[in-house]
Image 1: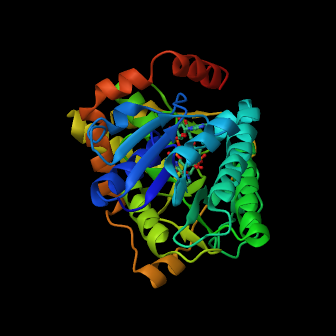
Image 2: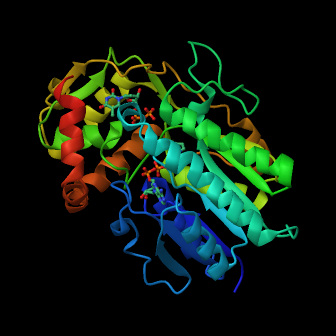
Length: 351
Ligand code: NAD
Ligand code: TYD
């Protein structure tokens, strides 16, 4: 058996793509997916690989120190790829506490468990923390975030991620724990929970429901296909230098309203509706408080050092994403039951 690797949050959107990639590409690694299975975690995402002999699922809450220590004891991890988090900005505005618990306290628990297990023997060990470009704050019309951009988080979500990034780097500087951090732009693709813009819009268009666009729809995001994020994570995990930070981005900036209009055109085609039908569903709603205007990532370090580049162009990636959601309506129905419906009503009823 090669490395023993802990992937946290592996039942979520990005985590499930990372788990699948590692389980299938590295059959000699033991991959342990530890996930609390919150509303965002779904084992259906991994049904195709759940029987692989190098894959183990552990239902675990990273906030629970004892459980985390016991997992390290049981599996003696060499590597950690830490994705578990509360990840939705709107939820962090309506209830920030869970973001502090999971994103900050959970990360410290993992760092402490790694430190206790690895002691002073750091050869072949790595704690890889997955973070977001949102920690850098909001850009004006010009410029891009580089690895040197000072942190300026502005939502409870990004503040909790920034805090966890600082703690991860502090464990490197203070205790010598080998860490890497990557900060990535907005992801899209199959298996994303339909509270985030793209899957929410796909699902609403499919059901002829209004597509809520915050404010004037002029906010800009840099969109990356989730498989490209997973391939970057693979490269950084294997070739990244401890103590370093890597920015990951799609070089693919879109105003929300332009993105939604493109999506509407794709949906009209796929659903065989007359052109312009879905656009009529666009509904401008009250803006998100503190809504960051623009994110854009300079990922030249990753491209230069590892030859990484994102693969599909945006309309190709969006089409693949739409195809996936339209052929996985059962997945959609399941994740949209119960708790999420209540959240949706709460979020959008006053807008
Ligand atoms: P997600 O919300 O889809 O999944 C998060 C997963 O973490 C879920 O499976 C959930 O059950 C699990 N989880 C939550 N709290 C937990 C806890 N206390 N203990 C154990 N597991 C817990 O999130 P995602 O979009 O896949 O994001 C994954 C990571 O990537 C996060 O750290 C996020 O900050 C980061 N990131 C996301 C994006 C994006 O666009 N989605 C961009 C950059 C970085
Ligand atoms: P989101 O997918 O929540 O990601 P993030 O806030 O992490 O960037 O939102 C992407 C953009 O879309 C953001 O500018 C907010 C906007 N948005 C809407 O206009 N309508 C919506 O219903 C949602 C969920 C987001």
